[in-house]
Length: 207
Picture 1 (cartoon, rainbow, N blue to C red):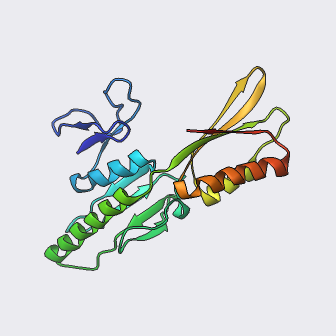
Picture 2: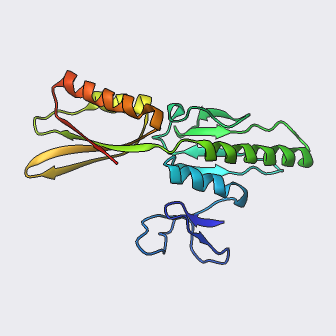
Picture 3: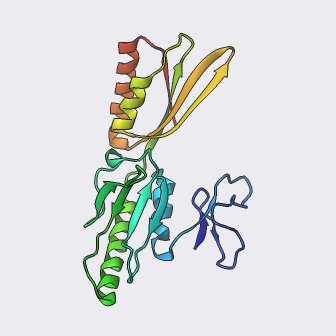
């Protein structure tokens, strides 16, 4: 199935759109990707909630197991749990991966295990909390570089965007961070504590 994970548009199988081409939908800046039908709903839900995926597999009777690889800014701390019977690891490219290892050898038994796993996967994605988003802006005009803050965020949360810009001759560093609602207040406290300890000005903008 061809779809855009930004706007959610699903395109006909006969569409001539190539994978990773720009989404043709007006005002959408996403890319078209090709996803196995049986895992499509799960991937759409994850991306809509902010858990960006890089690639996935629904599993096949002749080999591959169901799995999802997330973007590098997602790690084990981004989730409170993983789907039933799935395991997690860091793949060879440094991405966080969840995978259902299927031991069955016959096609029938593999198909049963795959289907059960995909149902558990969809249920897990559906029940995941939708993260809250905040913008954290650092004023770098005194040459301060918040390296320690970057470590704090990457170790405990999932960081989604980092940008730098200039305004009136001053340089700012802007973080967009998505965090589960139960960690939101703690994140704000951590940001303020970091600001006080390092004597820097930090603006927190809630979205």
